[in-house]
Length: 297
Ligand SMILES: [Zn+2]
Image (cartoon, rainbow, N blue to C red; front, side, top):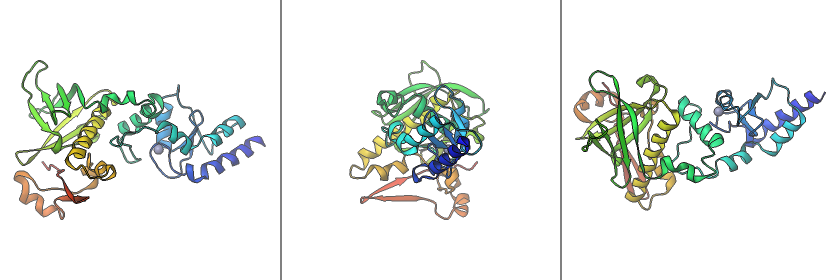
């Protein structure tokens, strides 16, 4: 009897407007829940929660038995209350993944929130918010496709991302302006779950760098550090623009959005296959011209 009563109570809680989207990725009608955090989550996110059992314990809303204490806890918490706590200090530039994003982005978002509590204690955001970041990434070689360890340095002060072919090299192999920089996760294309594609313009043509790091936190920290650098660059370049206008322009997942820009030597070929070849943004009178390109090989 109690079990049936609790099941009904839980279904009522799950149907409340606060709880009708997954607390972590926004997917509709989540039917799993973490009874230690007090949130309703989707099946995919519940799989990630299972990997951090010291923080989160999950059960099916419909199939598992729930006891009185757990129901009481879920009714006191819920997605909105938990969000107010665990997402209270998410920086504007930080990428919040959705259900369609790759595993590493979704997993690190969940770990950042509940395990590392990065959005409660802002000092934990230092790896991507300090304006400077350096470290080693595996970078795919141009010719043979082999991945080699390379030092990368991102400096907001210099307005650039640089990488070096040797650890002790004085001159960088490439200096990529933050202004012309895009980053997007491409695990399938790169053949690594943490694969990140960095795209930029040089001499009017599109260049790509393919990198990964074995550690999911590291690569997502790089991604958000790039977003932070672009955010601060755009804030200076367009001082009257609102944050909400700048945030969509930090990085573009162009493969998913499916538009192309013609650049470089393949102009003619790409012109035929693209209706809108270039996107411009109007933001408070200043034109933000984002050149994100799809490089077709
Ligand atoms: Zn989810």
